[in-house]
Length: 309
Image 1 (spheres, rainbow, N blue to C red):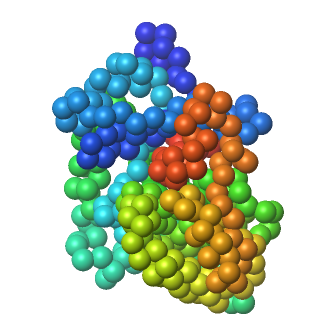
Image 2: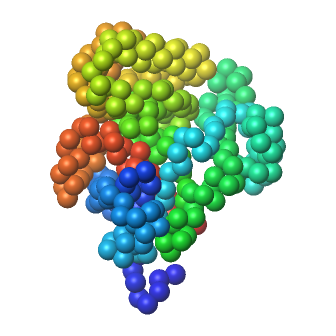
């Protein structure tokens, strides 16, 4: 409902809260030949979360946007589970109970959702779902500052699905894509094909680790080992999906990392460049590949194509 004649802006706006800043990104997909990033900016906090959100709501007219945010990796868990043999409307509740022995708190205290993983008919492989579980109190704590600032969140997302949204722009038709993206919190590796998320895992190496300049070769070795293990595991589980390449987001001396990984992995390795698949004429700072790394999941969360119910 639009109050007082206010027209809602198309596209999605993602707001992510950090210790010292709030990041915002607004992306428009509909009616564009390529997705366009209309806003990607960081605002230093003045006061707490609520004070800063209230200021931004007024300055940027945030009540005119469809808003989303991302959970932090410490706030949720993901599990690959067998898809329940129930009608689609009952699947979420069935998945919830399948997690009761996998999480260390009562399932009644969990918010649970799930997405289908393709490939259930591959060599007799059972259909699977990627389930996400978060404590109700973690969801409530995420929503509270937005509610207190009178900002309506229509969606709460997770980084894996945000990264999937970017990866689908970079895929080759019918081929799998591995994508490794670094930010201040760590690294996220996703496997996608035809716009669907198959697997994801966290790797505990962050942008700051590369900036230190210490033990660079050991860090490269560790990343390469984790990647090859993940590639081998994906190949065993999804033999009908050929991974055509690995795309890596920028880190300090990123060309050196790409060269190292290319020499030590079994797939071609390419540096991420959002300019190949997205437009951002009004956000020139995104021409810096390191800024792309810092904002990739933020942008991905705002890259949602479906409208909220």
